[in-house]
Image (cartoon, rainbow, N blue to C red; front, side, top):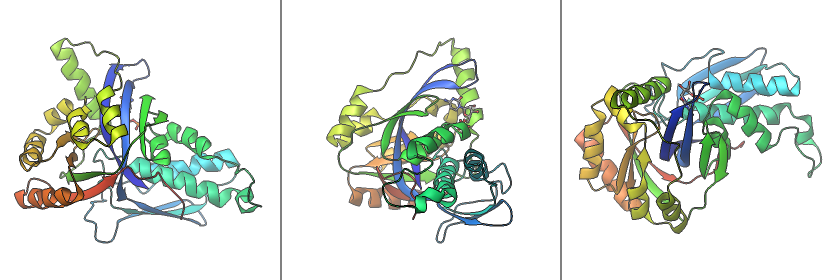
Length: 308
Ligand code: C5P
């Protein structure tokens, strides 16, 4: 199940329920966590870094707080079974990095558990499964705002908390370089900082609207247009909490990235390259500059979580 980068993250005013109304253009990229779900005497979660990955997993909970454990619980409750599974997560997506790694793990667990516990999935072809992909997206929304997209994948526009999704038309493949940072950023803390900055500036947030320029660039496969249209309303807040990210963004742009932005609530920074070859070069230059903990390359869009 893939990571995501937000191509547009428009953040509206805070709502009564503490969430913000968003226009969230999600884009799934080819950086994958692997999740295995097996029957076990009781619910158990194990987390490790994927082979060849240098992801730090120490901050990830291995109890009921893990989003994947919650996902198993929610599917079990819906299907009327006990959530007796061992969930093993091999992480390649940066933890608390603004790339929805936890949501990806939850989405994979939803799909795996639905398949494991759905008797009818073994039945004759053509039978409807007990839980369709739409059902899983609905259950996912209870776990987190980004989980439904992790089930769906591709490129999609999310409104509401970001959970009401419409697939977006895209053409071709886009090439990305990601610079991870030492230590994550807490999503609620970044939203709170965004509210604080707005209050300080006396700015009332307008309801966000989908960028037409972005949609056109995606639909026509226009890399330059996409680079110019990348926006993230949380970027200023992420930079305020982690000022060193400004240098990371400048470094990537200095090395010729077509566009750069903080991914979601950060601290991972995303850079768009014109071609795959340029992404390779950019990644090498970024690595050499030593401004990131890790430099990763990926392309998008890719499909959402799938059972193998
Ligand atoms: O839904 P999720 O658990 O992923 O959200 C994490 C946190 O991010 C929320 O508790 C909230 O502080 C913030 N958030 C928000 N508005 C959204 C989505 C998330 O304020 N639309």
